[in-house]
Image (cartoon, rainbow, N blue to C red; front, side):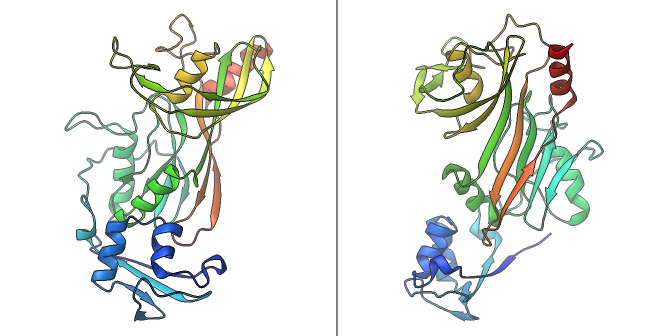
Length: 302
């Protein structure tokens, strides 16, 4: 198991003349406590020498960052291993991995000693490599598709910050009821807790938080619409709650469309566009549609 994580990169032209602190905190989105630790222990080097963080860096300068376990609250999370046989990998490098999550699999266990979740399968896959899976974001149990995990604690803060800053773009596919829907739109309703059902969320519920969902209609077929959906905020069940609120609930949603008899929720994490940590090279990963999506579309056409 690694006890330090080393990153080497160069200063991009857009950061030429900016203070080192700006590069670390505002461009690479490292939290202030990590910048402080790197500075205090002189574990950030510019052209192989320590440089105070208020000094400017220049285009093509070589940056070296060394992270150690004490930089993180949970550097080695306790994740039980399960079989990796069903794991479908969409992308992997030294720092992160994208999995095509199966519908019905939890992202992570809810109880101590529980296994069978996506992160347990990933732990089994990574174990021979001497590393661990680290949570970055979640998908609902009945949602399929692309989900991102980190392979070391050093990239977790910047990946989480990139999601919060909308630098990581997530696009979902959703089949909804009805075709009387605008070709595109923004849903802007605050979402809070449902006081009558702890499993659910609701518009203007308890402790509401601002929630924004963007959608584009891709197809209309036999009373149903296929939408591409992007989230500007990341509330629990946001897509499901928002689309139900405008009268177009998701097909197969047992919580927000209980009268629908379709057996599976038709929500799929379709595409992830990710600026890679510290290099900022942008990659785009697409998760193939699962069988239950194909089966539903076929049923509409026959």
